[in-house]
Image (cartoon, one colour):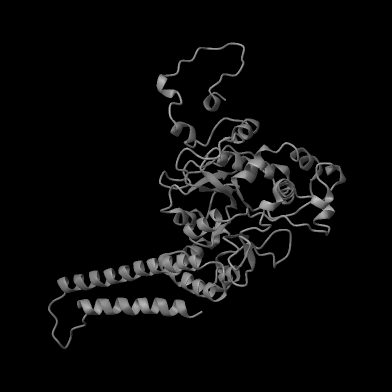
Length: 424
């Protein structure tokens, strides 16, 4: 309490505490700067109160660059962290990261990692129970402490990004709506889970269902964190086989701000195998066919216009998929895959010319890197061979030291790369 609010609790004995003058809030920067240490000592009640404080003046008196808060709800390690490291690289100031794990888990990310010291105070959360929603509210509340966080994405340790950071940032920040599924399911797994005790706060006609994995704006995040009206009802009357993480947020936000919801998720999952949980993909599953499934045939609405770019993330991917996914996102692999997917989208997508431009721009950059690397390698090999080998006779010359040979090999290699990539 003292650390965040500057007041002492009422206790039986109080020791005087002296603070240096420079600890006072003398500038705006000290008010708007996000906490440097996420491991605070606030209780959930204190945290939610602190996070729900909102400025009454809408116009910010500083240059506020909107950020996306990436909130990872995990059991422990992040086995796909290297993919996310590459995703975030070069985009400082446009994102923030928060990790909610089991309390017993202690992360050991190096200080150079984007995940270093990004764990928040956590509690045990169980699938299908209110403790899962508590964990999500905890993530949102901690993210709200950074006043520059404008959008909030819930992810798991098995999620991957489907596009580069710039594309996802522009898509989310540019959206008029928040991406949370909230549909009326008349069947046994929708309205069949409704309990009449939810009245009068929730009528059965307002009962909604949606995916746990959401993306919302700051206004809706505040609605979730400050809620004391709907929480008790869902906590008491939505228990298995009513899975509260599928109903609480979609129903509450439909009642409070239904017009702000896109009524869909931006996280791709595969339910084709049946069962209570979506399919999990291992290393042998990471194929071009799987990638095409995640991109082709999508139809949705983005900012009231038809779109075929609908999912920005995908799950569930096991740790064994890392090597195959890592190749897909490497310089060569990403160039091959991105060219293929860009051409697929060019043929099928009507979302935005800007989106296609972003993909092609990244492809060009990666292909240039590949080409320069190949030229450099052949040049070094040629130079080394020229210095170490005896002068060859015209009849026995292999030509490896020739610059034109190195360039020719590089051009041939790049041609192979583009040729392979273009064969859809």
